[in-house]
Every structure is written in structure tokens, then in C-alpha cells.
Length: 189
Image 1 (cartoon, helix red, strand yellow):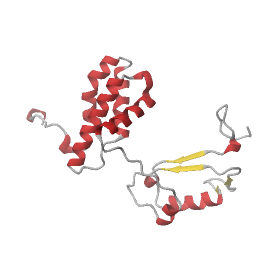
Image 2 (cartoon, one colour):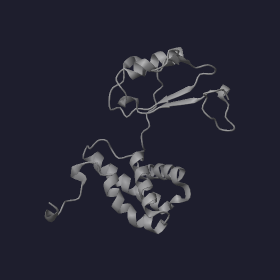
Image 3 (cartoon, helix red, strand yellow):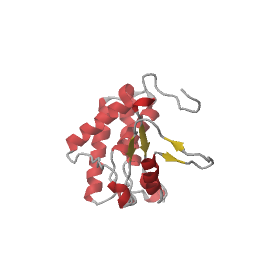
């Protein structure tokens, strides 16, 4: 490994290419997508503070760019992309199965199938209600994983406690709109 190169996994090889993730490009400055077109096309860019450009050599990297579509991206940028929309299943059983699979991947033995199922059922219920009321964004996989993560951390390895916590924590994870909050007692004021 040359000077200044990042460490790599034992079985990795730089000469086989790499993967670059640019997450949530829609939150970047407006000129970033067009700047990326130039950098990716020429396979070089000059970072601030350097006089010489950084150049990519060897095989092309796979560049994955995500967006939450909070802001429209330039047409010229979109034309050069292969677009894949990742939608969650509409059918509650398929939605639950997808979420549980993701939960098992992220948390493994740190939680039980019962907790993953309960979280999936809660998300499906809240997602259907949000859709019925036309609330956006709909709760999705990120909220599901946030709920399970919060329960796992709070329960500190106690699976029975996870099952007791999940309903309480879900109130704060899934319900993003004031209309979805439970009614407040007048005494809370």
C-alpha cells in the first residue's frame, strides 16, 4: 500500500475497482450534481487546499448516489444516471417480511423475532394511517430500524424488556405529525 492510501480489507484489491457512495445528494449545495458530472467524467478533481488534482486510475468505480427527492436534481445529471426507485411493498404482510429481514440483518441475535415482528406491525399500522391522511413522508425502513435500535439500546440485552419497551418507544419514532400524537391531558398544559 502506498503512502496516503486508505487501509483495505485483507481480501480486497484496489485493482478490481471500488464503490463510492454519495448519500442524499439532494441535501448538497445546488451546484454539487453538475460538479460531480465533471469530476466523474474526467476522473479527477482538485480539493480545496491542493494545487494538484486527485486522479482516479485503474478500473472505473461504481458510484451509487442516493436522494430523498427533497429537491429536484438537474436534468443533465439525471440523464447520466441509472435510476432505481426503492419503494416498500404496499401489502402489509410483504412489508413486514421485508422489514423483519432488514432487522435481522442489522441486529442479528441482539433482538428477538417477536420484537422485529411487533416493530414491523406498528410501522405498517402507522404507515397506513399516514397514507390515509396524506401525511408525508411516510414512515419507512429508516424509522423501523431506528425503533429497533432504540429498543435494543434501552433494554441493554434484556429481550423481555425489549418487548415491554417497544410500544412506548414507537410513539416517538413513527408519529411525525402533531395530529398523530395522543391527546394531551389538560393538566399537562
